Length: 124
Image (cartoon, rainbow, N blue to C red; front, side, top):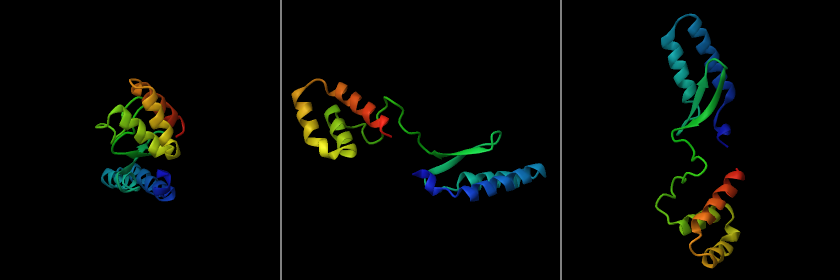
């Protein structure tokens, strides 16, 4: 979805102009063009540019949560609340089923939460 925020032709044009500036040893202009390319997506997104391979990737200020990490916004929730939040975001139609499951297996909230994290990360 973030790819749609980047005009690939514009970025490639900036990087080609940067290459020409570097060949002329005009490093001030080359750095300015690099910064424009980096800022091309706007917002909290930027581009990470690999000069050697002539590739670039969309980059965010904060890295996405790694497997097993607590996603942003979940830090202050109990395990039960985290489970309910995840189900609400990904499969709201199963919220009643999750409430029933959590009530049926008290003390196993962390195990259920881990399974939900694995399930929803696999769907992305």
